[in-house]
Length: 415
Image 1: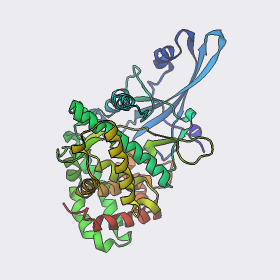
Image 2 (image 1 turned 90 degrees about the horizontal axis):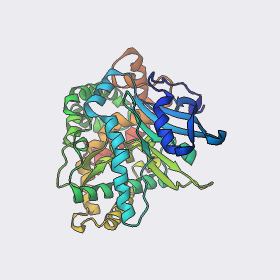
Image 3 (image 1 turned 45 degrees about the vertical axis):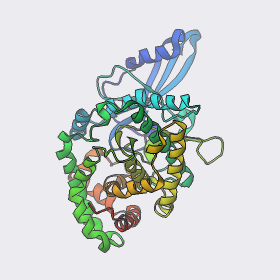
């Protein structure tokens, strides 16, 4: 089944006339009007919990009776009250639009000035919408696609993402060095202090299922005590990362770098990606780059490379980081050594537990039409089965048994 054959709720406010100005600017004097407009599901069922993703198909009439087909990707929030409250408090859609419209062009310009073409994501657009939204260029016609989250990223794809992350971190660290802090949006917590109670409720709800299933995981006797100690503290520990330590190597983190938020373009039959783009940047924050690295490597890679190649992949990332920092003329005295980067990964090992608790359950769960945000983060009869399946399925148990043992052996549960 393709995404185009699935159903998705379409907001009542989504009308073709909202796009008249955008399309008129795109086609200029040739533009006549919109001949047809069709919003369809942008993702397959079970691939997105936090927002509605729509692919917007237009047939645009031009002069001389020509018809041009155009498509965009629109992200807009569900009606789930808790999620909308989080959006309202944190301006998450406003932040993401700003990242695509302001931050990305600035970082790309830094590389252009240094003689290197680097692109981080799709073009973004603005419309006069009555609700929260992010409107992006549709990358599908250009050959971009996701890797199946259930398979995870192989070595080639993982290195492609790490190179892009290194370029992103290098440019944003240099931008911080040259211009100082970003606007307040990027220095505020991922979730505002006013939302901490809600986030604690979510963590407590998920924690109940996780701890209930803990005896199912291989080697749990070794890490059970440590897990039970860190679980009630994990929100406080993650919130602490929202105040960057000036002694760390800090940069603007992607904040939610996992498989479905990355797209790859290929050339011909070559299985290696020719380009890698970030497609979701709703949760950026200035903090140690350890956050992105742990979150991505533990949450999105194939099982066979996730842990046994971890140090190799960190070395690869570091090589890319120092190369691009040097290109941008970042001060050598402030450039982190590989040894220092590893100390950052140890210092913020808590991110690994957060990844196991929050990210891995939906990433490793088989697709289901029944999956939704409400059942994921709240206690309900409908959600009980979903959360039990998330924390007890064979794929999750395999990955998490290995990750928890690895984290415990690194002292990541100590705080």
